[in-house]
Length: 347
Image (cartoon, rainbow, N blue to C red; front, top):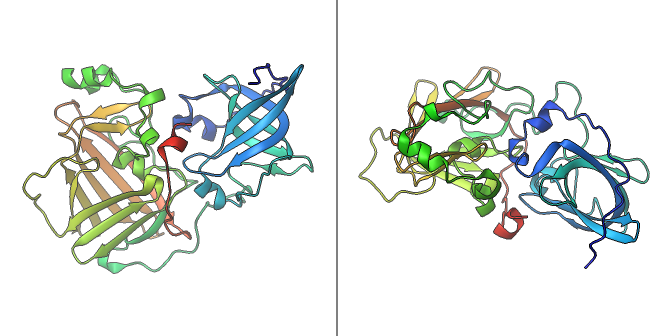
């Protein structure tokens, strides 16, 4: 086993953008304040979900050492021009990234430079100002669901002003003890986002996380009284009884609960109870009990922006509701199998 300390070509003062800092799921495992640059030979390119990996042999004073550096999900990279053949064993590359917190020879990739000067980034070719990833001309509205039906992708440019009330996806600072009951506060102490993130088990965790899945489309469709929401992220499929206003008799709790849905004017309302106890926000980590109740309200603006506003209440764990809002645009991509495996997710 090669255990030599590698010669890092240089430690550079990379500018860490707001977008990088906003990638909270990265923060428990990689340190944005420790930029690294390595040069070496590709030994393997694992083009898999939920994260691709580049393995690089880096020369050291007495030999070489293996570095394992993480990229975005293969399904996202494919839509940005990457393929399984973009990197091949034997290529010499320079990797710019940020250091892993626990692996001295690990990093999260910000860019890769090939010998001919070509630069590869997780975003692929940089879009022109004002362009949005994964967006094409608006498709005709499906009036059966007030225009909500279709395939959508989260807006890569615009963000809503923030959470409606309480901490949410746009406000990821850890909530204080005032947000929890005594029982809820005790439950929070059992969670460590470095090791307990549900994505390690290939779960999207909650509706809040499923809607915020980065760069992956969501399909909304209605078949009779069956409303189906398919989030590509972690192959999450949710079904609601459309037209029902009252929940059926209690059913065994499940990860994403039991849903009913109806139209209120031009707004699709999805009401869900019957959740298993779980994790509402993996980062920084907010646990919920089986008393969780969520309401999602979906509407389409005249410019074909889909607004997804949600509220989560849990009288056992929360002293006040958590809520947030996401903006979506029509997607040129169809939902594809995500294909997460526990082995890949636990890299």
